Image 1 (cartoon, rainbow, N blue to C red):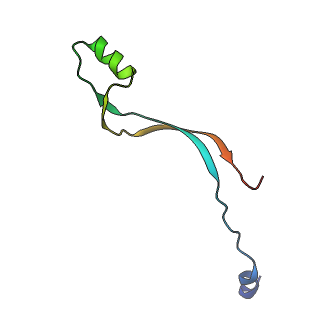
Image 2 (image 1 turned 135 degrees about the vertical axis):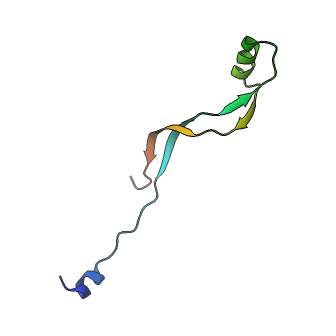
Image 3 (image 1 turned 90 degrees about the vertical axis):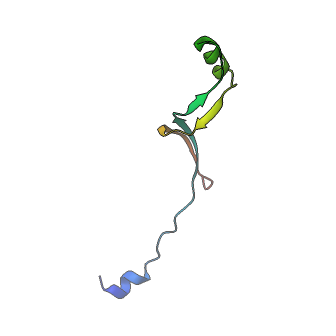
Amino acid sequence: MPAAARKLRPTPTPRVFHATVLVTRVEQWWVEAETADEARELLGSGHGHRQALGECVDVEIEAILDDAA
């Protein structure tokens, strides 16, 4: 195919897709407590402080939303 004919072909336009994604990551948290059991209870109930964001360890795509469909 001549080069001029290749230039006339329309290039496909990328579409935008949105997705619902479940991301699991490992984070470091801390809490002040008198025992490990108390610390576990406090952290489990959301009474901790995040020290640092961790690495992403798992990504699962739950749904891809296609507005054109």
